[in-house]
Image 1 (spheres, rainbow, N blue to C red):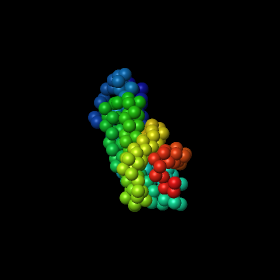
Image 2: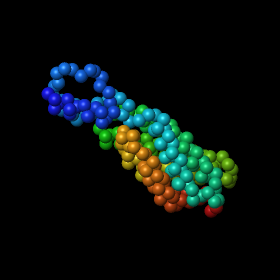
Image 3: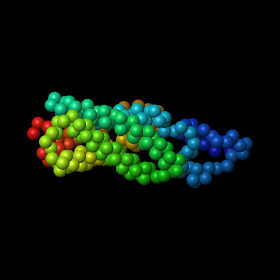
Image 4: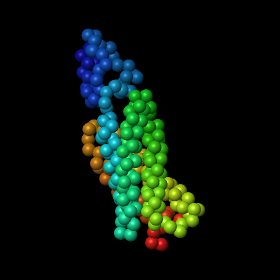
Length: 217
């Protein structure tokens, strides 16, 4: 009888959950379902504020590193990318935290959560890059660009942002979630994502030059 008690109590403490009922005097062996699926009550994955902060920092880092090369001749592009990444990241962080929590409570398989989080990230990346492009366009630097070129450039920005997020989100969301559960530091994952964004610059530059409006061309 004592073996079951000593097995179940550390499990609840490790997951940061609370027992919904008082421990009964008599114990029964855990079923297979209880062994496979951890308890779903309790604040396991961290608070909304922390998720909004981390995803906001991810957006700022990716925006600054992804467009930092253009600061010498198009500083507004860097400012727009950084601001758009940070602001949209705050919203995505709140959405991601709510989504992961609901999926966890529904006991959705980890790979299914990963696919959905990747799609969320690709939508975020596309929105972020389109907002960046529109901010640059609003400054008047693209005067003389035809509507067809403008539409093509918008599509290229959106596609590039989605591809960049495809390179980051599949592993970032999992690393961030695990660290949030463990109450560990999340900044290493953010720095790694910023490095990937910086390495993505040559692809972004080549894609933008295909639209024939790249600043300085």
